[in-house]
Length: 449
Image (cartoon, rainbow, N blue to C red; front, side):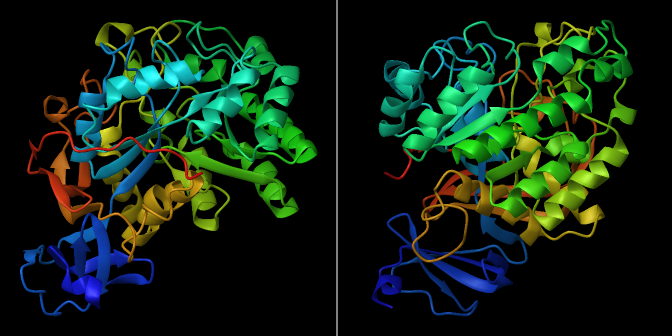
């Protein structure tokens, strides 16, 4: 109770999402931490400021563990200033940056230091970093782990950028064994290069032709091999951006056997379908691709039953000129940071899921994935006072001109979404409200050691 009496701020709502459910509450904050989750009508401590949000929902800030900021080196694609503003506008309070497509990639301690130097003064939200596993950097993995990266990203097929080559089977085994040796996490872009090679090689503007070039079997085969290797080594692995529902039985069986595997999917796989992609509209292109509506239904079922653990954006922007109308040559990536919470909530509510479910998938489990669940991911005593205030029943129509990421290309343009983010709070400070931003206040995070 003494800590509550020291509170500087109390946030009040009739709908606060806590680990025990949604209820009316007053959340007391001191020194950037939650020090009490109190009754709605609790007395405000002397000297504390009260912010009453009425019936708007107070939820823990979203934690997005899959973001390509591309800074330095390709900052014309995106940057820490713009990416973290977009995230904050969408209720995201923590992101973990992928080791590509920046130059240099985050594959050595020196390169990590370069990335941090660029990010430090530009981050509107908290930022952590993944390291990268390349064919020739096994020696760099433990030093990167000791420097605080949250794990290591690798590709099983070409990444799209020459400076981040993929791993063959022997290289994957060597990297996985090294990472398992110090208890680290390997996160994997799982598409099989052989299956991609033997798939049709179409070009042009037709989305169906593009979809045929990246068939479900490319994911399924890669995931089977990955699980087999992880099982043999005893490694901890995470499957990135799952799009193929055909792989779900493999994953469920591996989890039942005790293989240490977790899985994510993305808002675009849960909210967009192949049937609706116009020809030439490469703002919808990503790898693996957006698949059919029947496939999407199975992804939602897997989220509900826990086969898929979490939802992250895989925000991967580029300059507009790289989004040509030829799906074969256009850059593959969906820009979704600012819209992810609203997009997932819109689809979830239509399927009968609750905001508590969305928070579990986008905050609680993502925090746990990277070991930040002692600091992030819940409105609970001791956690960082990171919040989003959401009007869940209000709608808005997506206008690219109002987006904060650098190149305002979006697959969501013109869509009507539920869930307006009123404000976002980082360690008890309001960092954005009604489109007005404070100065950058984010911290650079390291893995708990």
